[in-house]
Length: 366
Image 1: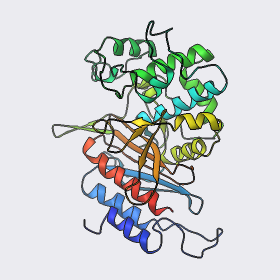
Image 2: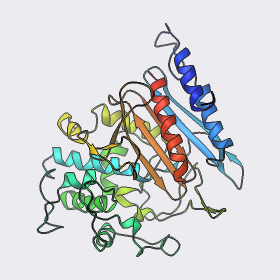
Image 3: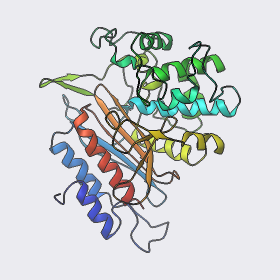
Image 4: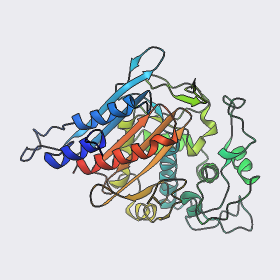
């Protein structure tokens, strides 16, 4: 491996702590050296991995530092600054799972009771839905939904759930499916009287003061400063920024920033969002399919835990992708160190590099 990009992060981490504090520095004077991480972001853009990339790191020594490279808007040439809003895709599932576990703690939802109200005569539980062991097919793969035709269509969770039910079930022990989260949205509404977006806003976004995180509802636009999202199909570029995200719903609708996502993971794993008993349940994992997720990923309830490759320990977080965007959110298990990286393109081939960079950065933050 050449000593550029990821290797530069690791080399500098070994020397002085790439994104950590200089040895002997006091808490008041510690500063983060983000040059290696910035170089890695620049290298991804130069390699045409994405038009633009943004990242936020957080740790007790560093506070939070946001970086950007490339462009947020190809047409205008507006540079990626690091604080742009993005569509966070399936990282939304972590927020939904947090709401569900709060309701479990309140006695309004039973984690291990079969959801027979919606699936009569079946043994599928809320836990199965949260960790993708229900076997339900993924509605996002259905031919009933056409991206071009339905881009601005409103979808109810019940409609998405019904589409998933009409598809063949999986016979695998673990099968990633957004249909699970459409059903969870229905269960949350039955328990609270509110849709999942209102509960996420009330229970997570407002208490944590995630001022740049937003539940879009039927609004296809991203307000304020944001990165435009791009699709590349057979060499052609398409602007996919505007989309009615009721299609993603409880499994993928949220708009956020990398900094806000770091705050969320710090709060969740730091014990500020769910009681200790429910956080313990969230962290109970089963092996995920590496062909669908990434090698070594273990699925908990709305989160994944994976062994770090570049140092000892594990990281916890979630990946997210939607047309035009890709996000990796990673945290140390104690919630003290985070890195979230996002690009304004949705190519699967770049995901391993983003995962490696997130892994190396968490190790460098020690």
